Amino acid sequence: MRRRRLVVLAASAGVLAVVATGCNDRANRDLNEYSTAKPAAPGPAKASAPSSTPVSPVSEARADATLRPADVREEGVSQAAADPAPRLPDCLASDAGRTEPVAAWSYPTGSKIYQYVLTGRLAGHDCGSGLTVAAQPGLDRQQSWCTAKNCGFAGTRAGTLSVVLVEAKQRAKAAEAVQRLAPAVTARLSAG
Picture 1: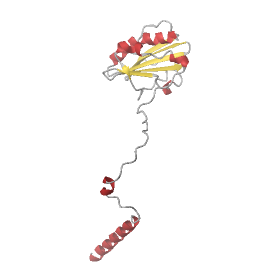
Picture 2: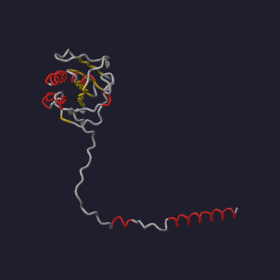
Picture 3: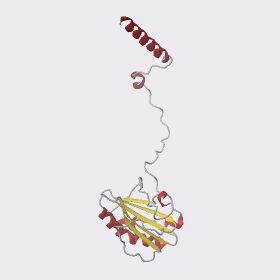
Picture 4: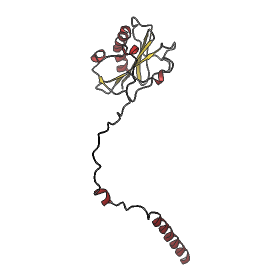
């Protein structure tokens, strides 16, 4: 038993010696080194990257379809970051799910409006149900829907597709907002 203790003690001492010599060439980093360090010389200020995803640029041909602050003023919203933005349903158009919003607004309650503008036509199949928006004059095609997470309206005219998604804690509130926003989306598409 005594012999085992000696072997273990000798092995431990050997390990400590190897560790100590392994750190032999490193500078001593104690607390004094950090507390007495001089601050770095001031340099030019660097702009920090924004924390939210920037809104995608829109070509001039589609810029007319983007809602303006006056279009959403009655909603009582303020412009907001579009990050994280909900993904568009693939049923709207090919590659719609990879599209970034061109604008986003936030309600005081935390609910959000996202607008997407794409070049293309509305796909031929429905995105769902749960919301019916009255036929909007001047659109080639329109579609409205509600999911568990949001409600939306999509309208297309002359090769431009504009989509508004509203995320709200209460689905009924999102549906009401989409009903109010559909005429503004239609007016912007018709103006272009």
